[in-house]
Image (cartoon, rainbow, N blue to C red; front, side, top):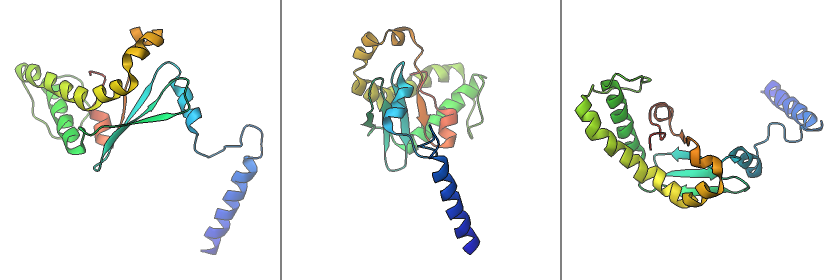
Length: 171
């Protein structure tokens, strides 16, 4: 136990010493929101967070040090898991490239045509629409020319299985 305490003190001393060097003052410290928002130079960055208790989105916007929060009350983890399995089954049934996500049934093209619009509609209603409403997206598309022609990307920080299988690019 004493060796562990000694190593911890030595580690902390070394980190503090490193922070005395130029440009290393924040070594191993979390970034502040202004620094994070610099990543949103060409348009908003949306991070969707899901949990059993609640789901929400964090939004970084250009020219701001604020991180916005948007509650997603229509989104819940069990429904996302169902959507994930549905999407994996639809993709598998169409013989499209898919990463393994769990058990799913092969589907016909007819099932794809019936189920995919509903799935995308659910993703729109539960995730994309509240976020775009919060951003007042018409203002963004007019103010940032690159957004008008850009292929928008969304990140989903969900659990490991969901992030591999459920994407918002189609929404």
